[in-house]
Amino acid sequence: MTHSPDPADPVRLLAVRDTPLSLDEVYAAVGDDAAGGTALFVGTVRDHDGGRPVTSLGYSAHPGAEAELRRVAEKVAADFPVRALAAVHRTGLLAVGEVAVVAAVSCPHRAEAFAACERLVDDLKHQVPIWKHQVFTDGAEEWVGAC
Image (cartoon, helix red, strand yellow):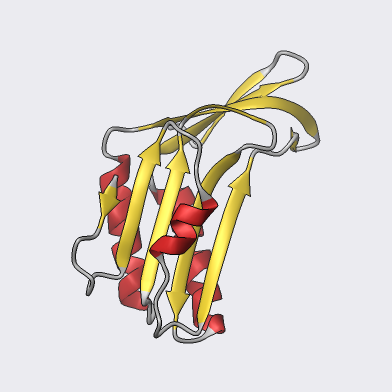
């Protein structure tokens, strides 16, 4: 887990962890008096995928996932007027309804915060080596994001 000790560093909290995630922790990490807008994204395990009912998801991460998450976060912070940024992703077996990812970005204005948070979540999903193993109600299984 990364907590930035440097208050000038907009990347405040990054983690890939196997324990339940806290929306309050992520939101608190991006608090900044100069920010007029904060966007918070919460990704949860849904009960279906592609029209098929899902019972659970298992998330696995490469040992370098957190370093890649930092690279993604630093790029977002460089491309937008980010005051503070945080992202935490869960690993392990999650049930339907559990929180899988929480990301938040604070910027001077709301439109910038929305755009930066969207980019952060999209890049996390496509570039950070975290894989999803879905289990369907019929017993079928599927890996998503694995090579």
